[in-house]
Amino acid sequence: MAAHTAVPTTAPAVAPISLSALAPWAAFVAVLMLVLLYFIGVEQGATAVFEGETVHEWLHDGRHLLGFPCH
Image (cartoon, rainbow, N blue to C red; front, side):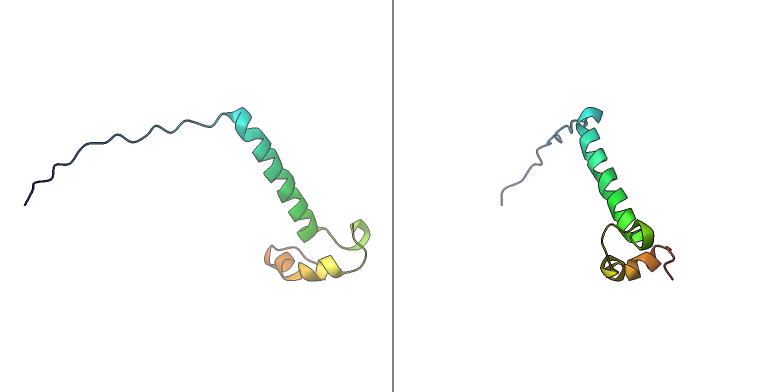
C-alpha cells in the first residue's frame, strides 16, 4: 500500500468589492423594496395606482402578516 502525503494548498485570495461597484446594486434593491412596500402597505383607496381592489386582495394576507391595517 502506498503512503499518501498531504500537500498543503493555499486558499485563493478573495478580492474586496469596491463601493462604486456595489452602489448600483444597492440602489436597485432599495427601489425594488420601496415598490414592494408601496404595493403591500399603501396600494388601496385614494392613493391607488390601479383601479379596483385586485392588488389589495392579492396582497391581503401579506399586508396583515407585516402589520399593516386594511379594515
